Length: 295
Image (tube, rainbow, N blue to C red; front, side, top):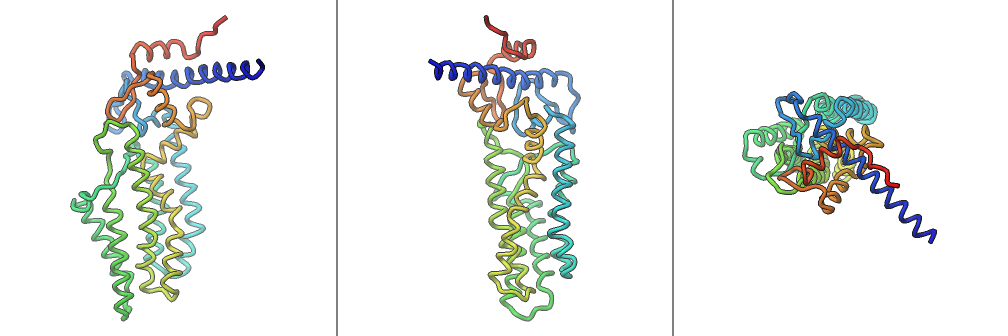
């Protein structure tokens, strides 16, 4: 009997918590009515789009995103930029500075765009520019080496690094699944982490006094920093800032929570967005953010 009573209490608490969390989302949608455009984009009063929900926390999410980017830049300055500068590697210093400082500029920007992998993007002007930049970096890294193998490694590694960047393209692909942009973003991060570090290591070996394996291993160890960089310069950083700034209001696993509400037929999908299944439910939650007590 005691166990049944405990389970019953947990179910009631879960219902109350779900009601409050849905009410937060409903109030956010209601507040979007009449909201001025954000970075030239109108914000929907019916669509819950995962990569746009940071607007729920407003300036708090953006400020937290900037603070995370500044912390990342400070750590990068200590562990990578200054050592690279002391080692007399100008190309490495430029790369390290770009990797650790670029998230600050992206965090300051008003709107964050998800990224995805696309082979077609390599054939665009943007893709060609990244590939050319990688090729140029590879040529510069070779320097005056007379070893053809090292020269080929420098050019090839730099070009491969440029092509990795060229594979990523901004903007979600058309889909009927609101979680597709998150999966695409994760795939882009994994490919970047797994390929970019080794590619830069191959290029750096062209002028390194260390062995090929050790040089590639050192650059591959930069993988976690590359992953954080990709997260902070895309909507993933702003989404994480949203979760941090809405403690006590929304669940940590917000994506899973929305999926569960969809499976419970409280929400429906519309392209890349979730919507309340009935507009009346959304309005009722706005008027009654707490579940009425039952006697």
